Amino acid sequence: MRNALVIGNWKMNGETAANHTLVASLVESLEVSPVGSVEVGICPPAVYLHSVGLQLEGSVVSLGAQNLSEHNAGAYTGEVSAAMLRDVGCHMVIVGHSERRSLYHEDDEQVAAKTLAALRAGLKPVLCVGETLAQRESGEALDVVARQLCAAVSGLEADEFERLVVAYEPVWAIGTGKTASPEQAQEVHAHIRTVLVRVAGVVGQNVQLLYGGSVNADNAAELFAKPDIDGGLIGGASLKANDFIAICRAAAVAG
Ligand code: PEP
Image 1: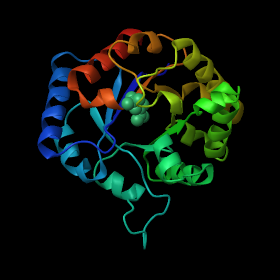
Image 2: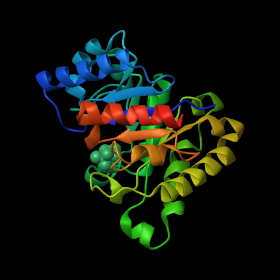
Image 3: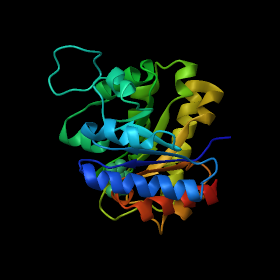
Image 4: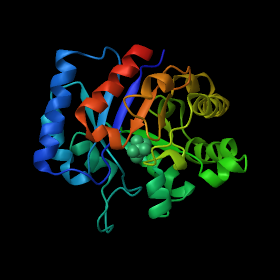
């Protein structure tokens, strides 16, 4: 049995006062009306991890980061290590988001190194994979996703698969208002599951698979109803408390 998981990716948005209001609404709403076994996480920008983490203490919402360095420590100006993320209370970290791959040229090798760095520090990596529109239109979506996935997980140990989360995020659906249909998303998720089981054995059945790409309060239920969609990685809609909560509740209903 896999628990549903909903993670908010705030990207480069927020400031102290607004973060406080947003987090207070989330925490209060989930306290008043809990979402059962659904796991909920939020990933603020790195500079706000500490303050948001303090506010989340004692709540059911976990803290996550949006990125990490593949290196442990040293002369890497501007970077943040996995151990530092653990130190400020993170439980998870997004790895290989398509914006990191396209804007900051992270390749499969670097994404693999970051995945390993996260796991070794005790963090849950939320490994993002997904095809561009051109790749989908030329029929390569499944191959692209399998390649990105295998590059990052091929060398992992069985216990590391137990902490892995994979997010399928078609690049053409991120921040565009275009969502993959539940059938398109399920097709890719089923493929990811098959590849995971091939690489990891039965433990691959337990990896939580999230869909991301313009998920909102209206389309979440349909997506989460699919058998291999275990929740969502939510960008824009995670910045509005009511929308994010509605998505968490949709996961609880589907779960
Ligand atoms: C994301 O950034 O991971 C994402 C899915 O964004 P959005 O929900 O805004 O498409």
